[in-house]
Image 1 (cartoon, rainbow, N blue to C red):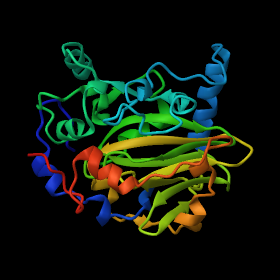
Image 2: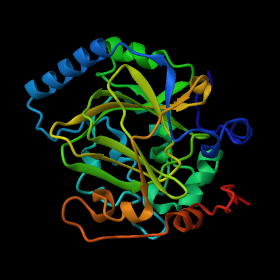
Image 3: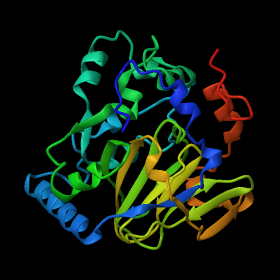
Image 4: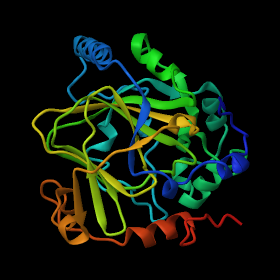
Amino acid sequence: MMQHRIGIDYSRALLKRKTKKSLPLVGRLSRTVDIEKLLAQIRQLLQCLRQEGASAGYADPASSEHNYHLKTSRGESFIRNYEEFYAQYSVIGFQDLSEEARISAAGLSFSVNDLTPSQRLRGMRNTSSVKYHPHYDERNYTKPTRFLTGYIAEVLSGFKAEACRAALVCLQPKNYISPHFDIGPEYVVRTMIPVITNSKSIVGIRTASGYSEFHLPADGGIYFINAGFEHYAINDGCEPRYQIRICLNGQDDLDGLVPLEPVRELSNTEFAQHPCARGYPNEQPAAENILLRTLREFNLEKSGKARLG
């Protein structure tokens, strides 16, 4: 298992890993979990929070979302509805910023939002970069919180790769996460374990002709999300959707990955009428060439290769 440390140059390791184009949009890992045991512990944790007087919109202080609110080079949020929703997305943080990362961040004279996306990408590749800031690197969120106990701790320790930035995330009914993109799977692998869901809880991922929509069932499966592609999530059901998000520093757990079939394909024209495109429920329509924006923000060639020189 490769363990993350600040100062590592990942350049050679990245060359050996699969890029987003070499992996399915969504896939099911070969490993499974005991969903009943997981659900029982999640319900117990949520009950404890209620007894502690936490509000319905409670966000655990260990949640990394406040450190992970990244901006574009124009100072805009990558996630359009961040202020209304995403800051409350992480309900219970299972992993916090490591002590090494805290000490490193405390000694810096700049913040995450002083950096351009291309500078952050350079830092993800080589963490000894002068423009590296620990807060934007998901691999630094490895310190267990008081909630990482019991079966949840067993699940995290069972991955072949180092788990990081794990949290219980909640998407409330009639809420959504607008289209955005995250770092590619060669840097960080994004997985989800659905715990409580409904058939109208959907993740959509960009394709050449539009979007593919997927439903992740709460069946004990661990699901890979190819978050390097533009994607969105929406819960159009009547109950909250709870998932455990687990990021991985490495791709060993993707051996035997089985692609998941989409429940619906949307053309670009059809997506223009989608709640995540129009805003949910009352935002004005918005359209943007995400490919060109991605190339510009991350200083990429059309092949997807970063120009870091």
